[in-house]
Amino acid sequence: PERLLLRKRIESATRTDPAVWLDAQEAAEDLFGDHMAANMLLVGAAWQTGALPLSLDAIEEAVRLNGVAVELNLAAFHWGRVAVAAPERLLPAQKGEPGENAAPVPLSAELAAILGRIEATGDVRRLLEIRVPELIAYQDAAYAADYVDFVGKILDAERRHAPGRDALSSAVAKYLFKLMAYKDEYEVARLLLDDAQRAKIREKFGDRALVTWHLHPSFLRRLGRKEKVRLGPWFTPVLQLLRGLKWVRRQNWDPLRLDRVRRVERTLIAHYREMIEAASGKLAAGFYDVATELAGLPDIVRGYDQVKLTSVKRYFERVALLTGRLGIEIETPPILAEFTPPLPETDGVKKRLAA
Image 1: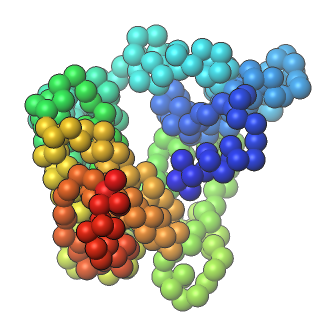
Image 2: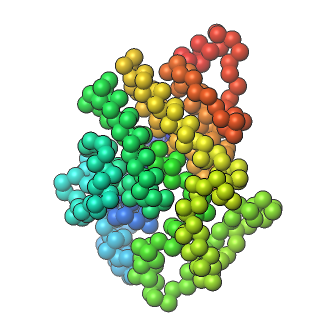
Image 3: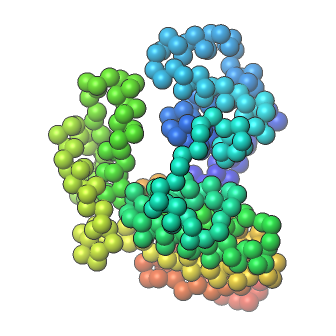
C-alpha cells in the first residue's frame, strides 16, 4: 500500500505518541546488503521502546541458540535499538558516511566511466553508485548510462534554479530506477539465481539445502490458475535460460512484450521521463517542492499483475493533481489512458483541482 495511506490507517487505530516509524527493509539493505535483517531491526526497535517484556540477555541468548546468521542478527537487533535511541546515527550509517562498518568498494572501470558522465555528489552520487550496477546487471551498460544521463539532465536544471538542493534529483535517481528495473520474467530468473543469495542460503542451511521456488507465472494466471506453482531444482535450467535471454527484453519480437502489464511498465518509463523533464522547466517559477513530489510518485506503483495495475490508477490520480498544479500537459499513451482520471469539465473545477 502507499506509505502515507498505510500510516494513516495505523495511526487511526493506535496510540501515535509512542509510535516509531522505520523503513526496516531499506535500512537492512543499506547496512548489511541483506533485506533478511529487517525483522531483527524491528525487534531491536521494539525492545528499545519498551514494547517487548524481555531482557536484553534473553534476546541475545535466543539469537545464539537459534544458530542462524548469529552475528548478522545481533548486529541488526542493536541497529534497531539505535534507530530509536539515536536515530541521527542511523541515517549517516545507511548513507555510508564516516562511521560506517564496511570499507568502500572500489569502482570498476565500466562503472566509473558511466558515473563519470555527470558530476553528481552527496546523496545523488550515493544513489547512483548503488543503482547503476543493478541496471547493468538488469540489462546492460547502455541501459545504465541512459539512466545516468537523464538524472544528470535533471541535476543540471536543479543546480540552475535551486542551487544547494538535491531532493528532486535524488527522487528521480530513486524512482526512475524503480520504473526501469521492473520485475519481468527475465529479472525474476536473474534474482532467483543470484550467486550472493545462494551463498547465503548455503551458509545458513548447508550445502545440501533443497531450494524450491513458489511462482505464479503470468501465462498461468491468464489460464485461470490462482495458486502458485512449486518448482524444485529441476527448474534451474529454465531459469538459467531466461536469465541469459534478458537482452531479448529490448527487442520488438520479445514474446513477453505483448503482456498487458509489461506494456504498461515499459510505457510508464517514457511517460515519467517526459513528465519530469517538463516539471524541471517549472523550477524557476517556484514549483520545486511540487516537482519533487511528482518525481516521487512511482513509490505508489507496487505489486504484481492486477495489484500493480490498480496501483497505477492511484498513481495517475496523483499525477493529474500535481501536473495540474504545475500547469504542464503530457500526452497520455493509449495503453495508459484507461488509468488516467477524466479531465475536469469546467474551468471552475479545474481551478479547484489545481488549488
